[in-house]
Length: 69
Image (cartoon, rainbow, N blue to C red; front, side, top):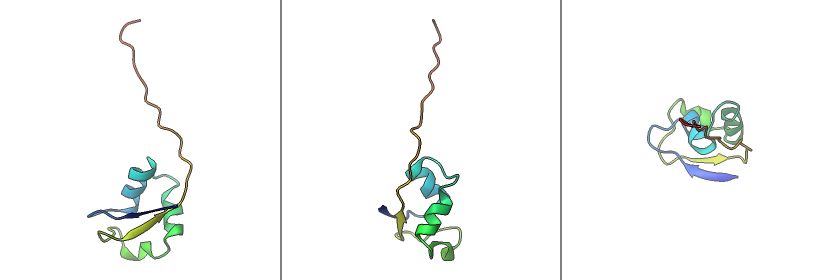
């Protein structure tokens, strides 16, 4: 587990995207780890500590295009 502080105008979705590289299926796990987080509404107050559970995320694969073979 890891703890971070929310940035100005942060949302749970934005935090998941920034920390895990995706939000699908991850937002729910972050909300489960932080039961009172949903009480803030959409925007989380700046400086709020958020516990991020250890979630395995696939490595992002960069696709490359070869212009000449």
